[in-house]
Image (cartoon, rainbow, N blue to C red; front, side, top):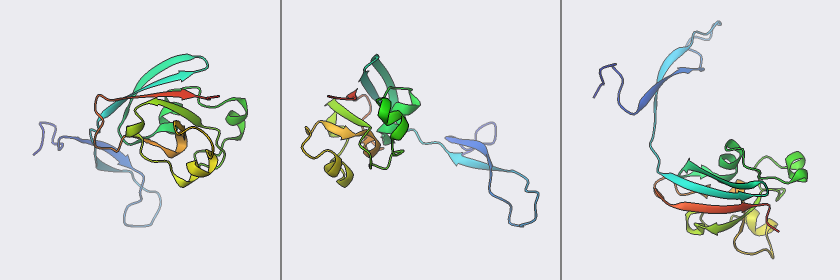
Length: 148
């Protein structure tokens, strides 16, 4: 069904960067329809060394990226310079989950390796998704960055 503007509901128009079928430059941008999904929103409350922060993120979003998008102080001094960029190799993005652990799933192999001997509530933010992408609406996840 088309709307008054001639666009299918829940879609947005964007300029595609892919070249046309011909391979002769210069490429002319094409208009494409992109489906916009409405994932459930999960509230995230973060306790950082600088104070409390609260925001909403879509279910299924990566925790590390959501925290960085919201400018939460995820890393200590060393981690700001030497983090692995989300590969689960350095262990600098450790967070303590105080509520909503059931929304985060099980520890990955990288977490098992880096967090051996640490409390079960400690997780690597780069390795966890907040929710499963389909549920969690109205739920809350509470985190503490840089736990000691």
